[in-house]
Image 1 (cartoon, rainbow, N blue to C red):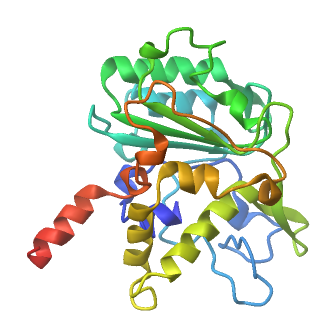
Image 2: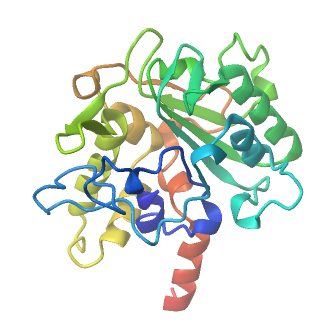
Length: 280
């Protein structure tokens, strides 16, 4: 979420954020109204949660039904517009899932499960009604690649779901691990796959000439210079994750190795606006 806002320059109108647990207000969290992925006790860390974070669905609103409604755009009457996504046939969409899962399922609230077939069916509906141009589906969970919506066992005809690429933090039978725990709360606070992806991007951005002056622009340029496959697959080896990254771009008009990360994680409209303001 923070990478999309700072590096990609997206506004909250283009992001739907679902958080199942109210971590900032949980009694076990000694840092109220904050979520620190690291360095909380030393004061050197940065909270990823603050007053600028717009949570669209939280707690009991985070359900399989609501997740699927957001994707296909079929909401109940009277739904708040800010909890909807305005998608078109020109939209490049990222769908990111992180949490607990297993072979062909992802858990919501420990009470229900999103199945691979549910994801495939929703994505097919989106294709039929023109709600995406290209889609990057990211799963960070145990046995994550079993959620692949273009797997033959759930989709016999790849032409029915074109231009959907999948990256996943683990293969069938593999666990996906946390990066580290916070001793103050006794909980794991960030997963290895997501953590290393973000850290790799930050390290690339720090090598940009003006990173000390404008980190946002440095992140943007780093995402322009890095392909989807490099960032989400090649730069995340088993020795860092403890599992193998699964990926596929089967049925896509462009291979992942040729797609700049910025095509998904940067708001090109904001880029065009900035360019027109500067007269370039």
